[in-house]
Image (cartoon, rainbow, N blue to C red; front, top):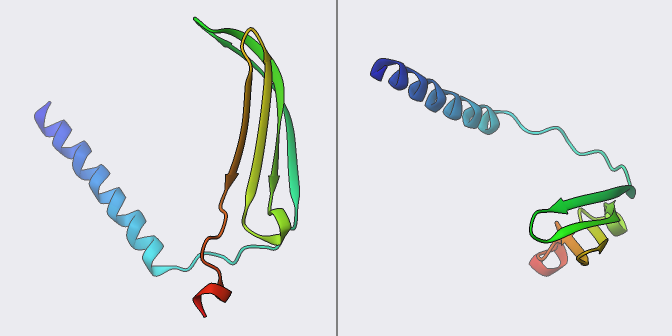
Length: 98
């Protein structure tokens, strides 16, 4: 059993280094400029101790031709939940760095 654990851990460690070295040697493919896209979805949730709720959400990607994404979720029922998430907002731009 001890030899099996050593073998599994060494294989996992080897795979971790192989994946990192692969990422260091090869460049990623260039991203395609797909423009604005969106995804609208229904949500139903049941949380023990809180109750159940229903609602919907929407996600916008590449807002204003940037890498920024915007997600909004609203749920109503035995409890209410409203969430707005903004991700990948560039803080440092080329104009600031020049």
